Amino acid sequence: MPAIENVTRRSAVYWWRRRLRLAPASANPITVVTMVSLLTKDQPVARRRAVAMTGRSEAVRMSLYEKIERDGLTAEQASAVFQEEMVRYRNMLAYQHQSIQQDGEGDVAERFAQMRAIYGAVNRDFAANGFGDFLGSGLVDHSQKMTVAARAMAEKKAVGRRS
Image 1 (tube, rainbow, N blue to C red):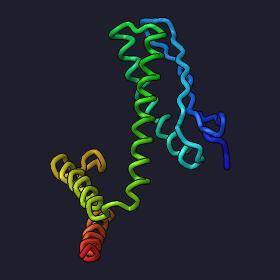
Image 2 (image 1 turned 90 degrees about the horizontal axis):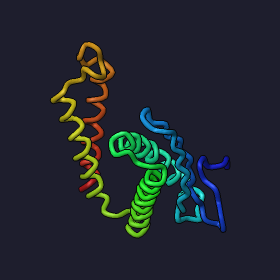
Image 3 (image 1 turned 45 degrees about the vertical axis):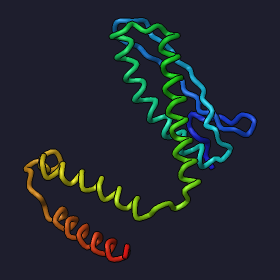
């Protein structure tokens, strides 16, 4: 398998590392270097956690720019904030993984209901705000009509299987 981006392996445990260069307009450039254990020896788990950590690090980077501008954080403070946030996120990922491992398949009906609730919320948002962001005219085209029909058929099949 190819190497995992931003990951090293030390003593059979995978570690996520990241170097960020923050160059806010009103302050000197700040380089933040952090290294966080992924708490796993399993490569597929490390790969998934590393991708999530890298994505989260970009969101944290943007908030750090704001904090540096607003609060005047020093390099040490910015590094501590970044490290703390990444450890907190890693802990959340590890907890989710552990709960899924303990739960196995879990309550499939409950998970299905949660997914339907999320899907319903997205549909209500589209209904309230229209499709203007997705289609220039705001009209529903033929491919979207087919999607609605396919969705209705899939829901009927899924509901029929639950009983």
